[in-house]
Image 1: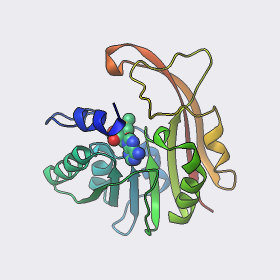
Image 2: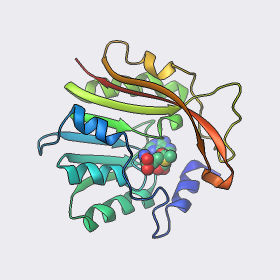
Image 3: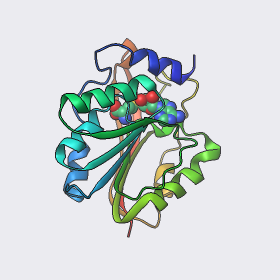
Length: 203
Ligand SMILES: C[S@@+](CC[C@H](N)C(=O)[O-])C[C@H]1O[C@@H](n2cnc3c(N)ncnc32)[C@H](O)[C@@H]1O
């Protein structure tokens, strides 16, 4: 089954598959680039919008995209329910174009869907779209020989090499860099993930 089919199905109902509580990393981004109406944020792979809507509530001007129509429909609805606006649309991390200039670009749990042949161009796009002084946050699942593939790992997802993500930001000011192993029970079976995270500033 393709990722589009899986996530479309998971996002179909009224419940929020990933919940509506924002990711804990957002507080770091807010501290590093405090909100104002003229500060623009891009969420790549926004899912059902919990983080994008939180950032809009904090006062940023937020744009977000995801591969799924149900994810975008629910992002727009969550924003409406909370009385804020998020510009949300369907797009593919592999092929998207965007002429905007952003103060914060972030992508959580999504970069594993980037095909190998699109990685270089993706990071070039990020560099172009980030304002000088702006912040990028990315996390990605990485492989470890001592960890098994998660039971709900999809054929379209690609594990990255440990440290690989960081090599794309050699010329940026690193604000935070991290690799952690954590337990998860998505799919109903407890398992472990290893995740690399970078927060960096374009100088
Ligand atoms: C693990 S979820 C994370 C969602 C969201 N960032 C969050 O934290 O709630 C991964 C997301 O990537 C999206 N996705 C998968 N392939 C994609 C692609 N090629 N382009 C854009 N989004 C994609 C899925 O639809 C899904 O919403």
